[in-house]
Image (cartoon, rainbow, N blue to C red; front, side, top):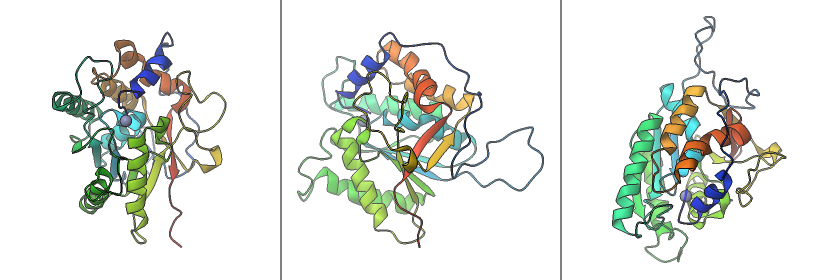
Length: 283
Ligand SMILES: [Zn+2]
């Protein structure tokens, strides 16, 4: 999720706060919308479940997907197609490593991204290799990263034909300019599509007491009444997310890799990931 600054946020969040894992099988509140019934051996024979959606997640940096990782794992586990795109390869974000910015770092972060995707049970990520930290730079310039991202997003949607697109909200999580720009780009492209367009969902931290962790003060929150989708995950999906974050050795200190996903589960997620629908249903 990071250029060089966001690792610090997580590092602060986790310092001394790692606690025992909660049981992800604890009952969670019912989903508000668009949830699909998880597989259950005890469920009686009944009307066919809706097929899991085809998901296209368009994000900015290798490790951004950790924010929504249990959902990606769940959809893949239940047979849905998950396509993950990272607009940059994180080439200026050494994180907690001592690596210099550049191609070597980018290659290593791509490797970490592939490791995380394997852990989540999804296909290898697609990397657009736009400049890390440059998505919002000179956006109007003819060959700007933002303009390249516009064209690439349109192509990706045409190719993947997803039911649902996931991206950062306008807050960019903690405000990273790359996150904000990829959100704006994806929103612009989807907003030009006609009825039948994929649903566009923004990752959202719900506003409310107890939802923000120490170290996450910079993170944007979304009013509860605007949270349209809460998607549950199961213990195995949480396990997959924990395995995924463990891949990001350059980005997170060992105690963060070991504890951040569990901390998010216990505090913010509590068994379900929150999203905000970007556009209303077609009239
Ligand atoms: Zn990022």
